[in-house]
Length: 70
Image (cartoon, rainbow, N blue to C red; front, side, top):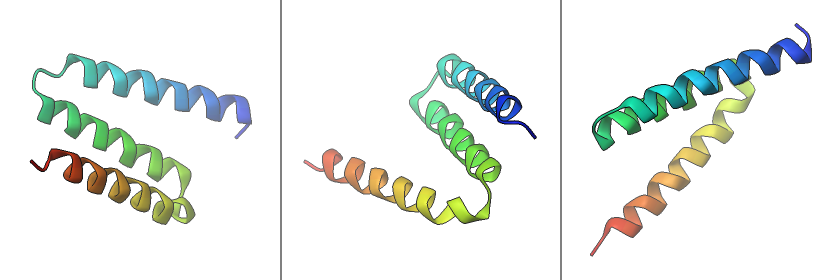
């Protein structure tokens, strides 16, 4: 596949995901759609990219957990 078509597919996935996230009523539904988007991007990137994505998600989750503590 050409780079141009790969970019077009990625842009389409991003536009679809952002539409779902913005249309969601609750914050939990927004989070679910955001995680679905991240997982779809991970699948598109291939198995080699998965550990880096998992590490990034874990880092963000830890940071959010620390910020939410009183």
